[in-house]
Length: 225
Image 1 (tube, one colour):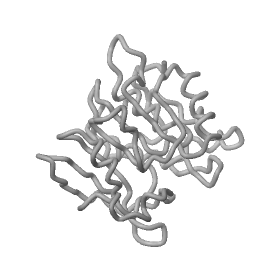
Image 2 (image 1 turned 180 degrees about the horizontal axis):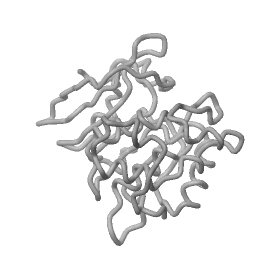
Image 3 (image 1 turned 120 degrees about the vertical axis):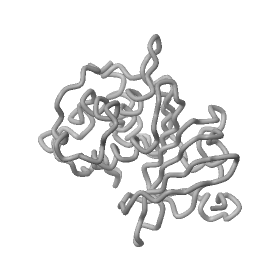
Image 4 (image 1 turned 90 degrees about the vertical axis):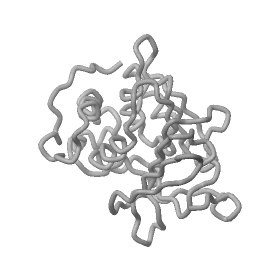
């Protein structure tokens, strides 16, 4: 398990928008250098996305911080992550949901589309003492047997909100996702489920790799906004 003692991290003075001390402490505890390809370790302290293979990237740390802060995660929350990628964001989620007496990550469920990325992410997370549930699959369909989730974080741009993810979100839950096509303007959406209804807040423009799934070919699988 990573040392949870808050300590300086490279982007502290660049993030006035990140005011949650628990989010800052999580970023201080998780070394980004442990989640980037070896030849890019020298760039790990840059607040910028980096390639990790399979046409995917490890997201810009600030964007991850903005997303997890918006989710208002508490210890014990059950979280679904779509697009584990390098495992870096997964580790941040493990820190934020950890409960004393449990292995950090027991409340985190992460799905990755590419087996090679999932394998590397699992090894990195285990080395640092994290124990999330991680599997390979199509994230648009979620993880129904583990639902409901207090929070869902999607790390790829979706042209529609997948109905399975909406249905797996608990009442009062929060889902954050980049919304839009790759060649169009994407916006970060915070979606809340209140009395079974969808409430959407836009948090600004972003640019993510696209979410790929046959689900988007079937309008019946899209949640109504």
